[in-house]
Length: 89
Length: 452
Image 1 (cartoon, rainbow over the protein chains, first blue to last red):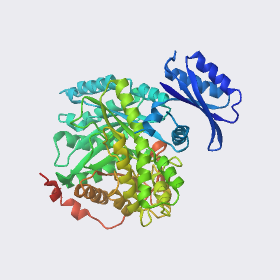
Image 2 (image 1 turned 45 degrees about the vertical axis):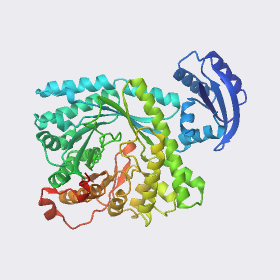
Image 3 (image 1 turned 45 degrees about the horizontal axis):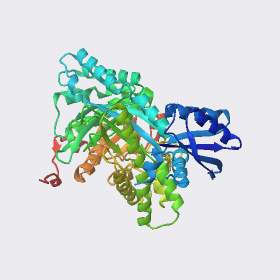
Image 4 (image 1 turned 90 degrees about the vertical axis):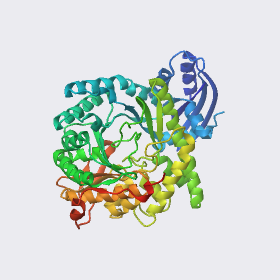
């Protein structure tokens, strides 16, 4: 089971370390990272493996959001099913 | 495998293009609440609703967090209250309305639908009582929504009901005059009403539905408009294809959320209503979709044709995306809830007559239209009759939600606030249908009803 974690904001240098640390605490493993610009904003997309997650996924969503707030970024974790359902027949 | 561009597309739809789940609506049967004693009836109704829906709001918020998609409203719809009001007087019916309102407040749902009657063939005792109680019920409660089905292709048009509803709407406008005649924003008159519509104000829990059910209404006018703008110049067939694919993606999210809600609440999944439902927010407008398709402004020549293409493409794309599609499913054109409609009405480009034509090719009716406060009841009945005739002859749902805002004239704007938006008061043609309306009785069912 996977989650997509999006990081949107000005400067994400150092944020990869912070997100990884938070993920590790929750038993989440980052599989893939890509970076792009979405509507003028720097955006990082991480695919994370949540099959061994040690907290409820909604708690993980809250923790990611809080990490974002502390660092003036928008960090949102979303379950992969929303992407799968939209883009696969 | 999740492709980055797909991920970015989904995130863009949610963040920039106002993609959301407009509502998760739980339908609840109140048949087993029947009682001779009005107070006992209210207690049973209250208990049933609270027991069934106590986890609805929390579950909606959890699902919203899980998938990262806003779920704007959690709502409840109930068995048409007229079916329970056979032994009640008007006060007894209003008590039920207050009970529904209290339950909605305590659950944290913003609307509760089902203060309704189905009278397409005639009035039962309960229907009469319910309808007569509507003005008081809607002006003394906050969250209760009411609807009256006055026509069907099978039964024809109950013109006695249509005549009465013109007066009921006026009275509701008067009793809620201190609040912009907001009572009328919670009242719809239908032809061919769907029994599983999750949107307000017309939602109720139909007679053939299970004990409880989850229906989801998606929405994404902003998503469709953006997709059209990105496509640039293309043929109408390509445009239809594009809208279909976009509607597929939007509806898929509705299906995902509906299945999740059904699982978590242990309530059967009913339908996904794949309607494009606008909000007053910028970018969330059906009118802007039509303008993106190449119309200078919504309401100009070509509007009805463009809407026909849009409505059909939405349905075709959405049907593939969901295992059960129902409700209204199409494009909504509520004037006060659509920034583009409001602008077009203010500019004099959009009239009630044009809107009436548009209702022939889209999924709902004359919706959230403010008209002068002194519009005669017979004229309101005439507008309703016209709208219902379109639905009855064309075997589709049509409806009228008209707001004769007390004291308001053409040129004024009525502000309802929130998702109900604001409405410029639109002119109604003079010329009275009173003699026609007062003939009474039923307009017979059209020949199309003899399909067996």
